[in-house]
Image (tube, rainbow, N blue to C red; front, side):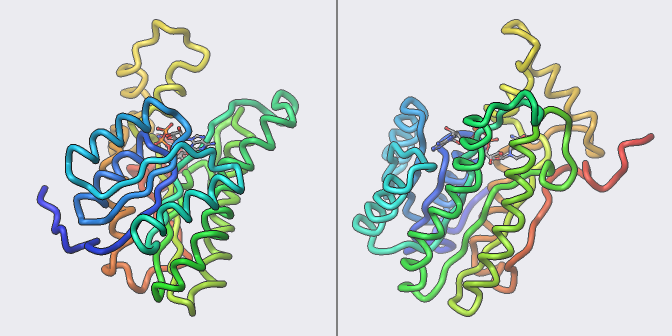
Length: 265
Ligand SMILES: NC(=O)c1ccc[n+]([C@@H]2O[C@H](COP(=O)([O-])OP(=O)(O)OC[C@H]3O[C@@H](n4cnc5c(N)ncnc54)[C@H](O)[C@@H]3O)[C@@H](O)[C@H]2O)c1
Protein backbone atom coordinates (compact mmCIF):
# COMPACT_ATOMS: atom_id res chain seq x y z
CA UNK A 1 0.00 0.00 0.00
CA UNK A 2 1.28 3.46 -0.81
CA UNK A 3 0.59 6.15 1.75
CA UNK A 4 0.44 9.83 0.94
CA UNK A 5 3.12 11.61 3.03
CA UNK A 6 0.91 14.72 2.95
CA UNK A 7 -1.86 12.95 4.90
CA UNK A 8 -0.25 13.79 8.25
CA UNK A 9 2.45 16.17 7.01
CA UNK A 10 3.36 18.70 9.72
CA UNK A 11 1.34 16.78 12.33
CA UNK A 12 2.76 15.54 15.61
CA UNK A 13 1.35 12.31 17.04
CA UNK A 14 1.84 11.03 20.58
CA UNK A 15 1.27 7.29 20.90
CA UNK A 16 1.24 5.27 24.14
CA UNK A 17 2.74 1.78 23.85
CA UNK A 18 5.52 0.70 21.51
CA UNK A 19 4.44 -2.80 20.46
CA UNK A 20 1.45 -4.42 18.75
CA UNK A 21 -1.24 -1.94 17.72
CA UNK A 22 0.88 1.02 18.91
CA UNK A 23 3.80 -0.13 16.75
CA UNK A 24 1.58 -0.58 13.68
CA UNK A 25 0.03 2.84 14.34
CA UNK A 26 3.43 4.52 14.69
CA UNK A 27 4.46 3.01 11.35
CA UNK A 28 1.17 4.01 9.68
CA UNK A 29 1.14 7.61 10.95
CA UNK A 30 4.84 8.02 10.15
CA UNK A 31 4.19 6.73 6.63
CA UNK A 32 1.58 9.50 6.35
CA UNK A 33 4.22 12.08 7.29
CA UNK A 34 3.58 12.55 11.03
CA UNK A 35 6.31 13.16 13.58
CA UNK A 36 6.06 10.51 16.26
CA UNK A 37 6.32 10.74 20.06
CA UNK A 38 6.06 7.15 21.29
CA UNK A 39 5.79 6.37 25.00
CA UNK A 40 6.58 2.84 26.10
CA UNK A 41 7.65 1.13 29.29
CA UNK A 42 9.57 -1.80 27.78
CA UNK A 43 13.13 -0.75 26.94
CA UNK A 44 13.80 -3.40 24.27
CA UNK A 45 10.62 -2.54 22.38
CA UNK A 46 11.39 1.17 22.67
CA UNK A 47 14.90 0.68 21.30
CA UNK A 48 13.64 -1.42 18.37
CA UNK A 49 11.04 1.20 17.42
CA UNK A 50 13.55 4.03 17.83
CA UNK A 51 16.02 2.28 15.53
CA UNK A 52 13.36 1.49 12.93
CA UNK A 53 12.02 5.06 12.82
CA UNK A 54 15.54 6.50 12.66
CA UNK A 55 16.40 4.15 9.78
CA UNK A 56 13.27 5.35 7.97
CA UNK A 57 14.23 9.00 8.44
CA UNK A 58 11.14 9.64 10.59
CA UNK A 59 11.19 12.59 12.99
CA UNK A 60 10.62 10.68 16.20
CA UNK A 61 11.10 10.64 19.94
CA UNK A 62 10.74 7.27 21.61
CA UNK A 63 10.57 7.83 25.36
CA UNK A 64 10.62 5.50 28.32
CA UNK A 65 7.43 6.43 30.10
CA UNK A 66 5.16 4.77 32.63
CA UNK A 67 1.90 6.20 31.33
CA UNK A 68 0.28 5.73 34.74
CA UNK A 69 2.65 8.32 36.22
CA UNK A 70 1.43 11.92 36.06
CA UNK A 71 4.84 13.64 35.89
CA UNK A 72 6.19 11.22 33.29
CA UNK A 73 3.25 11.87 30.96
CA UNK A 74 3.52 15.63 31.56
CA UNK A 75 7.23 15.48 30.67
CA UNK A 76 6.60 13.34 27.57
CA UNK A 77 4.04 15.81 26.22
CA UNK A 78 6.43 18.69 26.96
CA UNK A 79 9.32 16.86 25.27
CA UNK A 80 7.24 16.23 22.15
CA UNK A 81 6.05 19.81 21.98
CA UNK A 82 9.59 21.09 22.64
CA UNK A 83 11.03 18.91 19.91
CA UNK A 84 8.38 19.21 17.18
CA UNK A 85 6.55 22.45 18.02
CA UNK A 86 3.12 21.18 19.07
CA UNK A 87 0.74 18.25 19.33
CA UNK A 88 -2.09 17.26 16.97
CA UNK A 89 -2.84 13.58 17.54
CA UNK A 90 -2.94 11.28 20.57
CA UNK A 91 -3.39 7.52 20.26
CA UNK A 92 -3.78 5.78 23.61
CA UNK A 93 -2.91 2.13 23.06
CA UNK A 94 -0.96 1.18 26.21
CA UNK A 95 -2.67 -1.30 28.50
CA UNK A 96 -2.16 -4.10 30.96
CA UNK A 97 -4.35 -7.19 30.85
CA UNK A 98 -4.54 -8.86 34.24
CA UNK A 99 -6.61 -12.00 34.69
CA UNK A 100 -8.86 -12.53 37.68
CA UNK A 101 -12.32 -12.21 39.17
CA UNK A 102 -13.26 -9.65 41.83
CA UNK A 103 -12.21 -12.12 44.52
CA UNK A 104 -8.95 -13.28 42.92
CA UNK A 105 -7.74 -9.83 41.78
CA UNK A 106 -5.83 -8.03 44.51
CA UNK A 107 -6.40 -4.33 45.09
CA UNK A 108 -2.98 -3.31 43.76
CA UNK A 109 -3.60 -5.15 40.47
CA UNK A 110 -7.06 -3.59 40.19
CA UNK A 111 -5.69 -0.09 40.81
CA UNK A 112 -2.78 -0.58 38.43
CA UNK A 113 -5.15 -1.64 35.62
CA UNK A 114 -7.26 1.45 36.22
CA UNK A 115 -4.19 3.70 36.31
CA UNK A 116 -2.53 2.30 33.17
CA UNK A 117 -5.59 1.64 31.00
CA UNK A 118 -7.83 4.58 31.99
CA UNK A 119 -5.68 6.98 34.02
CA UNK A 120 -3.21 7.28 31.15
CA UNK A 121 -5.99 8.49 28.85
CA UNK A 122 -6.94 11.13 31.39
CA UNK A 123 -3.27 12.14 31.71
CA UNK A 124 -2.55 12.42 27.98
CA UNK A 125 -5.77 14.45 27.63
CA UNK A 126 -4.98 16.62 30.66
CA UNK A 127 -1.55 17.60 29.36
CA UNK A 128 -2.14 17.14 25.64
CA UNK A 129 -5.46 18.85 24.93
CA UNK A 130 -4.23 22.37 25.84
CA UNK A 131 -1.43 21.84 23.30
CA UNK A 132 -3.95 20.69 20.66
CA UNK A 133 -6.12 23.73 21.32
CA UNK A 134 -3.08 25.95 20.77
CA UNK A 135 -2.87 24.38 17.27
CA UNK A 136 -6.59 24.94 16.62
CA UNK A 137 -7.72 21.37 17.36
CA UNK A 138 -6.69 17.76 17.11
CA UNK A 139 -7.76 14.14 17.23
CA UNK A 140 -7.60 11.53 19.98
CA UNK A 141 -8.16 7.81 19.48
CA UNK A 142 -8.44 5.52 22.50
CA UNK A 143 -7.93 1.79 22.04
CA UNK A 144 -10.69 0.01 23.96
CA UNK A 145 -11.86 -3.56 23.30
CA UNK A 146 -14.93 -5.64 22.54
CA UNK A 147 -14.61 -6.52 26.23
CA UNK A 148 -16.00 -3.05 26.95
CA UNK A 149 -19.32 -4.27 25.51
CA UNK A 150 -19.51 -7.97 26.36
CA UNK A 151 -16.83 -9.68 28.37
CA UNK A 152 -15.29 -13.03 29.09
CA UNK A 153 -15.01 -14.53 32.54
CA UNK A 154 -11.92 -13.91 34.66
CA UNK A 155 -10.99 -10.48 33.32
CA UNK A 156 -12.91 -8.26 35.77
CA UNK A 157 -10.36 -5.43 35.99
CA UNK A 158 -9.44 -5.40 32.29
CA UNK A 159 -13.03 -5.46 31.05
CA UNK A 160 -14.01 -2.72 33.50
CA UNK A 161 -11.24 -0.46 32.19
CA UNK A 162 -12.40 -1.02 28.62
CA UNK A 163 -15.97 0.01 29.46
CA UNK A 164 -14.60 3.07 31.24
CA UNK A 165 -12.67 4.01 28.10
CA UNK A 166 -15.94 4.19 26.14
CA UNK A 167 -17.37 6.58 28.74
CA UNK A 168 -14.22 8.71 28.98
CA UNK A 169 -14.16 8.94 25.17
CA UNK A 170 -17.70 10.33 25.08
CA UNK A 171 -16.99 12.74 27.93
CA UNK A 172 -13.82 14.13 26.32
CA UNK A 173 -15.57 14.40 22.96
CA UNK A 174 -18.38 16.51 24.40
CA UNK A 175 -16.12 18.71 26.49
CA UNK A 176 -13.71 19.59 23.67
CA UNK A 177 -15.83 19.43 20.50
CA UNK A 178 -16.14 23.21 20.26
CA UNK A 179 -12.38 23.50 20.68
CA UNK A 180 -11.92 21.37 17.57
CA UNK A 181 -10.64 18.28 19.37
CA UNK A 182 -12.30 15.07 18.13
CA UNK A 183 -12.20 12.03 20.41
CA UNK A 184 -13.12 8.49 19.36
CA UNK A 185 -12.37 4.94 20.43
CA UNK A 186 -11.80 1.70 18.58
CA UNK A 187 -12.82 -1.67 19.98
CA UNK A 188 -10.86 -4.55 18.51
CA UNK A 189 -11.66 -8.24 18.69
CA UNK A 190 -8.68 -10.61 18.79
CA UNK A 191 -5.63 -9.07 17.11
CA UNK A 192 -2.24 -10.71 16.49
CA UNK A 193 -0.10 -8.85 19.09
CA UNK A 194 1.96 -9.63 22.20
CA UNK A 195 -1.14 -9.23 24.43
CA UNK A 196 -2.94 -11.97 22.49
CA UNK A 197 0.15 -14.15 22.59
CA UNK A 198 0.14 -13.82 26.37
CA UNK A 199 -3.57 -14.76 26.33
CA UNK A 200 -2.69 -17.86 24.29
CA UNK A 201 0.00 -18.81 26.81
CA UNK A 202 -2.09 -18.03 29.91
CA UNK A 203 -2.56 -21.24 31.83
CA UNK A 204 -1.31 -23.33 28.90
CA UNK A 205 2.42 -23.38 29.66
CA UNK A 206 5.47 -22.40 27.59
CA UNK A 207 5.03 -25.17 24.96
CA UNK A 208 1.67 -23.92 23.74
CA UNK A 209 1.22 -23.75 19.96
CA UNK A 210 0.48 -20.01 19.66
CA UNK A 211 -0.56 -20.20 16.00
CA UNK A 212 -3.02 -23.01 16.79
CA UNK A 213 -4.44 -20.90 19.62
CA UNK A 214 -4.74 -17.91 17.26
CA UNK A 215 -6.65 -20.13 14.77
CA UNK A 216 -8.94 -21.22 17.61
CA UNK A 217 -9.52 -17.59 18.66
CA UNK A 218 -10.15 -16.75 14.99
CA UNK A 219 -12.89 -19.39 14.74
CA UNK A 220 -14.98 -17.38 17.23
CA UNK A 221 -14.99 -14.43 14.81
CA UNK A 222 -17.51 -14.64 11.93
CA UNK A 223 -14.75 -13.70 9.45
CA UNK A 224 -12.97 -16.85 10.60
CA UNK A 225 -9.64 -15.36 11.65
CA UNK A 226 -8.05 -12.97 14.11
CA UNK A 227 -7.20 -9.45 12.96
CA UNK A 228 -3.81 -7.94 12.16
CA UNK A 229 -2.46 -4.87 13.98
CA UNK A 230 -2.14 -3.08 10.62
CA UNK A 231 -5.90 -3.39 10.12
CA UNK A 232 -6.51 -1.61 13.43
CA UNK A 233 -3.85 1.00 12.62
CA UNK A 234 -5.66 1.77 9.36
CA UNK A 235 -8.90 2.52 11.23
CA UNK A 236 -7.00 4.60 13.79
CA UNK A 237 -5.29 6.55 10.99
CA UNK A 238 -8.67 7.25 9.39
CA UNK A 239 -10.05 8.58 12.69
CA UNK A 240 -6.95 10.76 13.16
CA UNK A 241 -7.24 12.18 9.65
CA UNK A 242 -9.25 15.03 8.19
CA UNK A 243 -11.37 12.39 6.39
CA UNK A 244 -13.01 11.76 9.77
CA UNK A 245 -13.79 15.44 10.31
CA UNK A 246 -17.41 14.79 11.41
CA UNK A 247 -16.59 11.80 13.64
CA UNK A 248 -16.42 12.38 17.36
CA UNK A 249 -17.69 10.77 20.56
CA UNK A 250 -18.12 7.38 18.91
CA UNK A 251 -16.70 3.90 19.17
CA UNK A 252 -15.72 1.92 16.08
CA UNK A 253 -15.68 -1.87 16.41
CA UNK A 254 -13.06 -3.76 14.46
CA UNK A 255 -13.81 -7.32 15.45
CA UNK A 256 -14.44 -9.46 12.38
CA UNK A 257 -18.13 -9.52 13.27
CA UNK A 258 -17.54 -10.99 16.75
CA UNK A 259 -20.07 -8.79 18.55
CA UNK A 260 -22.63 -8.86 15.72
CA UNK A 261 -23.90 -12.28 16.77
CA UNK A 262 -24.94 -14.05 19.94
CA UNK A 263 -22.33 -16.77 19.62
CA UNK A 264 -24.82 -19.57 18.82
CA UNK A 265 -24.63 -21.49 15.53
N1 LIG B 1 -4.54 -7.73 20.76
C1 LIG B 1 -5.82 -7.89 21.01
O1 LIG B 1 -6.40 -8.96 20.77
C2 LIG B 1 -6.61 -6.75 21.57
C3 LIG B 1 -8.00 -6.84 21.59
C4 LIG B 1 -8.74 -5.79 22.11
C5 LIG B 1 -8.11 -4.66 22.58
N2 LIG B 1 -6.76 -4.59 22.58
C6 LIG B 1 -6.14 -3.38 23.11
O2 LIG B 1 -5.18 -2.90 22.20
C7 LIG B 1 -4.25 -2.09 22.91
C8 LIG B 1 -2.84 -2.44 22.48
O3 LIG B 1 -2.56 -3.77 22.87
P1 LIG B 1 -1.78 -4.73 21.90
O4 LIG B 1 -2.74 -5.75 21.45
O5 LIG B 1 -1.05 -3.93 20.89
O6 LIG B 1 -0.79 -5.47 22.91
P2 LIG B 1 0.66 -5.04 23.42
O7 LIG B 1 0.92 -5.81 24.66
O8 LIG B 1 1.63 -5.17 22.29
O9 LIG B 1 0.48 -3.48 23.72
C9 LIG B 1 0.35 -2.93 24.99
C10 LIG B 1 1.42 -1.89 25.13
O10 LIG B 1 1.24 -1.16 26.35
C11 LIG B 1 2.51 -0.93 26.90
N3 LIG B 1 2.37 -0.62 28.32
C12 LIG B 1 1.83 -1.39 29.30
N4 LIG B 1 1.90 -0.74 30.48
C13 LIG B 1 2.48 0.45 30.23
C14 LIG B 1 2.84 1.56 31.04
N5 LIG B 1 2.59 1.57 32.35
N6 LIG B 1 3.43 2.62 30.45
C15 LIG B 1 3.69 2.62 29.13
N7 LIG B 1 3.37 1.61 28.30
C16 LIG B 1 2.78 0.53 28.86
C17 LIG B 1 3.24 -2.24 26.65
O11 LIG B 1 4.62 -2.11 26.82
C18 LIG B 1 2.83 -2.49 25.21
O12 LIG B 1 3.67 -1.81 24.29
C19 LIG B 1 -4.51 -2.31 24.39
O13 LIG B 1 -5.25 -1.21 24.89
C20 LIG B 1 -5.37 -3.57 24.40
O14 LIG B 1 -6.21 -3.62 25.53
C21 LIG B 1 -5.98 -5.60 22.08
